Length: 163
Image (cartoon, rainbow, N blue to C red):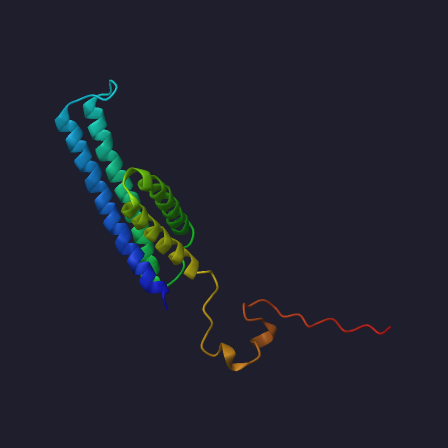
């Protein structure tokens, strides 16, 4: 199966991105702090602090998304609830960053963002919500006590009516 390896790769990529985003924003905050120049009258200390805080928050967001992907890989089950929402939002973030990266950074950054987007979407789509079939599902055995394969009661078909 391709599901677990994709989940492992997505987890590793998101953890690496979390570290990279946090480090990049921290570095930019240090640069702004050492320049001691204002941008349109903004306080340089405020810009430095907000860059560092933004990097930490964004890094924690990607780390949380990586944790969701790691749990998917360990449990081999689809993400549910908040985890699914986090992975969908990470896919949207990568799509938007990819669109901006083409013009600001270049095609290589765009390609990286699209590959990560594709991995996240593949992770979400391979776990399509259908339960795994047991090994003896193809044996043709009748369900027990009038229950269908999903546990719901089976109703017999209606008797044909005579004309």
